[in-house]
Structures are given as structure tokens and as C-alpha cells.
Length: 507
Ligand SMILES: [Zn+2]
Image (cartoon, rainbow, N blue to C red):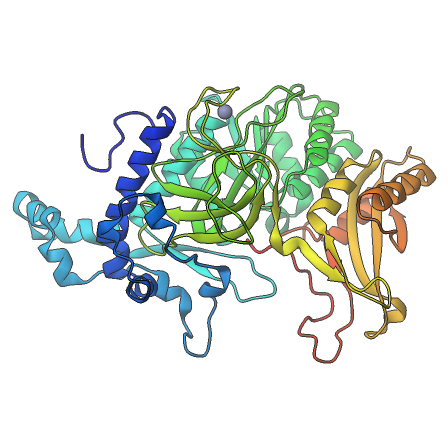
């Protein structure tokens, strides 16, 4: 067996084989690449006495402290923190490596040098879309672009696409993972792919014209943007009967949103559309996807690539690694990255039903899966709704609730201060776009009831708008990402948050 090669396909290994493979790859990756070449981890391993070459099992690995989002941010002592996570090889050490020497003997020195450049020289980057913090850049070498492409090809397989599918990529054109994951994966899979750059680059109308012209089988983008595009097509009495897959990424994809998207696609003339979600983040430098599933079932979860990444699920309070099937926080370690790398990186994402190793009931793959709803720790916000105490509100739950309310097409939550006074209480206002035929009073009552039942609070106001007005409020065609939560609370003395700041989950 070639070192680093899978003797079987990535999605056909049994749990014990997966664990063996991951431990071997982890030991080799940390010993040969991370410890010698990565400033942050070299120091961290030294401080904690962690010796990767002596890694015996996953209990050993669990002794290594987590890396957090905070570790990636600049400080006065570390003004270029993200650079410390980049593998910067030591020329002399590389020159002594047996593979380098062999390559130099067989193909000449310049070929050996080119291979090292391909492996280690950064040529590409994507960045987080942090709005409350500086974006953090993650660098890719050619080796990483190969892995990004490989992950993309696997996504195409998991989505069960046909070779003749035409793909339209509606993700915003930006140095963000989603756009490039689709581009590399789809083109390499030899699928015709048109990347429009999303609403901000071309405007909604142009996107719609291109959809009509191309007749795509797969439409890929952020759920809210896809919703507005398809909804506008419906309002303009257009048809689109070619769709087979709507692939969602870049933000959460609540069940209610998926149902709405499928219903609109059906009204446009596309029956039996699979609405499938992806899970990816900048630090992973790849994304994972769901396979098609029967409409009356829950999705089987995100199919992971066990040879490229190690995913742990840990107790968010204690940090203890949890056995499969338990809800907890997703922790990511790359097994084959160059450029920027993270080890035991806490994503802040909570997975409802944890990690599963049994065969997927729908596609039969035995790759591990992350099953259930993913919610973000950062989506809990403190609000002062009465004079006595602050209330912690789960915006994950709020989003799911609003997507479920019958008759609600699009929505936006606005946080305000009563009387626009920074010292006064917080207020929660819901903007709702409903179908013209819908009864607003009925919808208002439904929203109030679900808020009282599940969040034990009443919204301070519910305002109705046309779906066109909701597109304006969301900034469709203007923003890279539609604004679903707007914080209009004026800035108080000593409060670092600025007015009108939208604090979305940072991807
Ligand atoms: Zn599956």
C-alpha cells in the first residue's frame, strides 16, 4: 500500500479502518509538516510537551488543547496571527527528505524544486466574512487546490448528479470558500458550470435571465438568495422546469426554508427537486454535503471525507470528546493540508445528533456523517427586554421557527432600542413578507403564538411588507449576504458594537 493512499474508496471504509487510517495520517501530518513548519503549533506542542511522533491513540490526541477562533485573531504581540498558522518549510530540512532526494535523482533538481513549490508555495486564499472582527485569511498551495478539487468532486458524487447536468453557481463572487468550492469541484467533474457571482455582481434580473437561458439542473447558492430569485421568477410568471437539485450553502438551511424552496421550484415547473445542504467553513478549506433523500424523511447528514479531515464532537462545556451519536461542538483537524492549517479547531457549531459511522440509509456510503441540525454558539444574543435582567435568545431557534410559520415567505428580525434611546430596553421587531393572498392577521397570531410557546417572549412589533419590499430590506442584489438579522440599536457609551451592525455568524 502506498503511503497516504486509500486502498479502498474514501466512502467504503468501516469504522475501525477509518480510525486506523486517521490515526496514521494524523501522526504523519503533525510530525512531518505541522511541528517543524507551523509557528503556532511548534510553540504550542513545545509548551504542552506534546510529541506527535509518539501519538499512540486518540486519547493522546485529546490532551492537546483546542485552537479557538480567538487564537486566529491579531493582537499587539501577534500583529499577523494568521501567518503563524501557515506551513513555512525549512529548505534544508526539505532538501534532506528522502522523497526530495529520490525525485532529484530520478527527474533532476529542477523537478524536485517544482514539486516542493507545488506542495508548499501559497497561491490562493479564501477568508472569513467576519463582520465584527477582521476577516481571517486561509492560504492554499497547489496541494490544497488539489484537495479542494477532490472535495468538490466528492460533493458532486454525494449529490448524485448526472454527467449532463448544467450547474449554475449563484454564490457571491468573493474570496469565500463557497464560490470556489463549487467552481473547482464542478468544473473538475466535467459539469458545465456558469458562475454568475450572485446578486451583487450581476443583479437579480440578470441571474434570472441566465437561469431561463441555461436551463440548469443544479442551482447552487445561499438559501435566502435562491429563495428571492425563484420567488421573483414566480411573480413574473416565468417557468423553469429543468431543476433537479437546489444546493444550499453559506448560511443555515432550516427545514422550513427547504420546503418553501421545493414548493416554489414545483410551481415553476420542476418536480421532485432535491434540496440539499452543505457544511463548510474557511478553516476547513473544504465543504461536506448531504445525499438525496426521500421527501418524507430527514436528511442523512453531511458526508465527511475521513482521509482529508478528522472531525471530533466535544462537550461544549468541558471539552471532553463525546462518543458517536451525541450532540456537541464540532472540532476540526486537517489531515492533509499545506498553506494554513488548524489542529483541534473549535468551530463554535453545535451538531444536534453528533457523528455517525453506520452506513448511510440512503446512499449506502460508510463515510462518517454529521447528523442533525447545526446551530451556532455565536447565534445566542443577550437582549434587555425588561428592566430587571438580560435574556439570552437563541437566534438559531428563532430562525427555524420563522421559517416554519405557515404563510411567512421572507422575514427579517430587527433589534431596536425603545424610543431610540441607548439606555432604554431592547425591542424585537419582525418584518414579514407574505404571499398576497395570505391573511395577515392569521399570520400575526401564528408568529405571536410560536414566540410565546418556544421563546417565552412576545415580539414588540410585526410589520408586513410585499416580497419585493423584503428583497429591498434583505439587500438582495446589493449585499454579499442577505441581511436577515439587523441590529439597529444605537451605540451606547462603552458599548463596542456600532449602530446598524449585522452580526451574522462568521464564516
Ligand atoms: Zn448518504
